[in-house]
Amino acid sequence: MATHLPMNHRLRPFYRVLSGATGVYLLGFGLTGVARSWGDPFFDQGDTKAWGLRTNMAFSLLSVLVGLIILAGMLIGRNVDRNINLVGAAVFMLAGLFMLPLSRSSLDFLNYDVSASVVSFIIGSILLTAGLYGRVGPPAAQAAEDGFRLGKDGDPVLHQWTKLPPKKGKTSKFA
Image 1: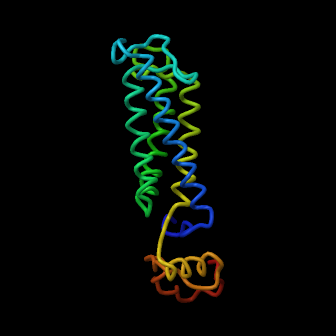
Image 2 (image 1 turned 90 degrees about the horizontal axis):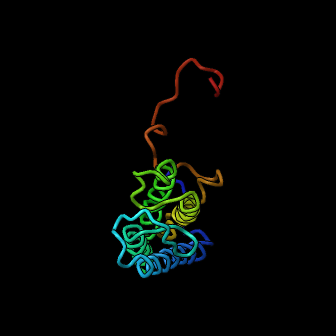
């Protein structure tokens, strides 16, 4: 299935800018969090907030790092940004999922709360969308993929299931 995602999608520049805006948000949040949590313990579970979310130095520095990675991927382009966006989407979705039950407990090392988990899910959704529609390829591959998607041509990837011989003795194509 992953091989049949859109290639050279017409809204790819929009999704690329959207992932870049996500990187800018993470960078801004992280830098604000570093400034506000300066001097606090690294994994502090206090009430330090940046842009409405609870944070600590660890969470802030991690946000700066991830924001820079997403921005670098956006600037490089090609399929690098797509891969970074897909991996980032999984990381943000899993972080929101795993940190939600840990919020306000002694195991909450990133000082997460419910609103930070919601923001994490939103960022993960944006990066997932940008990754799914960010694939780039040559025009010939795009034409073959479009032909398959529209039902005009065969499978351009030739999966194993397309090479199986037809079953003998079956009269119905659904059997």
